[in-house]
Amino acid sequence: MPGSLKPTQTKQIIFICAAVIIDSLGIGIIMPVMPDLIEQLTNLSISEAAIWGGYLTFAYAIMQFLFSPLIGALSDRYGRRPILLLSLAVLGIDYIFMGLAPNIWLLFIGRIIAGIGGATFATAFAYMADISSQKDRAKNFALVGASFGFGFIFGPIIGGLAGEISPRMPFYTAAIISFANLLYGWYVLPESLPKQQRRPLSLSRANPFGALKQVSNLPGISWLILAFFLFELGFFVYPAIWSFYAKEKFNWTVFEIGMSLTFVGVFFTIAQGWLIRHMLPKFGNAGTALIGISASIFTLLAFGFITQGWMVYALLPIMALSAIISPSLKAMMSNRVNTNAQGELQGVLASASALTMILAPLIMTQLFSYFTSAQTPYYFPGAPFIMAALFMALALPPFFKGRAYKN
Image (tube, rainbow, N blue to C red; front, side, top):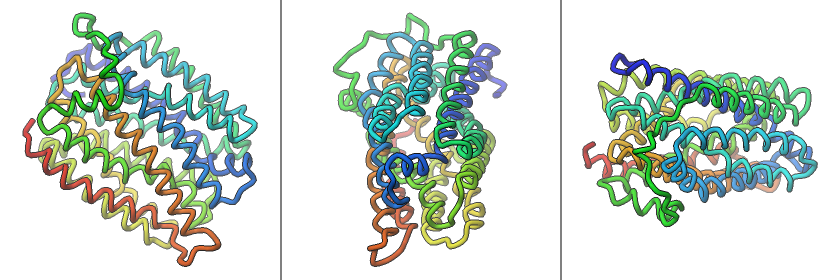
């Protein structure tokens, strides 16, 4: 931890990072088994199951888009701690519900509930903003991301092993982990937003459009939000298509997919937990983000054309540089927002991210299905990655525009 932190701040950072690690385990656990579970529930081919995977992600994301600003506003009004704990309770119950789902429609309902309750990470970023100075925010935001990556190292491998028993077993495992996280947070997580710094709840701002209008009035914020949106739209090709792409192109098993995701978590953790701390003093928030975007464009283009499974692992260290983009962009925006509006800002960013989760899976899974179906005129399973690289490139003009406003 930085030497400028007070002991209390260090404890708070440890608490929130530990909470994110445990929570990310639950997310990573279920990813490797989704293709097999969808195939089991629908009796469809992998190409057709990918489309259903996109619809499930859509159901989750639309709820995130609609409810994230409200949850952010509630955390500005009532504090971060109760929102984090309530979210964990809802997610734990929902994992059990999805594990028991006998058909695809009840799995949809489970994803809807998860979308409403899954505000843990946005609230965690608001928590970090509360306890961080402006110069430390990007580093501390990166710690949240690194904590997610650390949990993601073990989540997919646990999911891959549990998935060999049953496609439903990872959901029950995720529920246990979520409830354990809830108990941990209940006893050790302190509140980060003092009562005197809280503000009344405004329903006109507790929605995606009202909150976006409010924060966009700040200098350069709207351009950076647009850049963030386009970056996320490209980045979400990974969760949208990775399992289907690996199974189709390299014929990987559930365990092999889980192992690949584990290595993604390793490199992301290194990038956010160590590398970014050395880059920020040299390049600043904007320079660090630009390096990450450039590396991401290269990696996405490469994923589109690689032919062997080992090439995936060769690209992972470069791919991991995409992990430094989000904390750098978020710090650029957070430094322009008052303390009692950090939840609102993080709610807007969560909504922007959720909107990309709505659009990206639909775009990427449809592309994947078209270019891998028996009727396709040109077999090209890497097509979604080329589209993602285009979105990343489109993020550059608004990024440069927003960067012109100095923090």
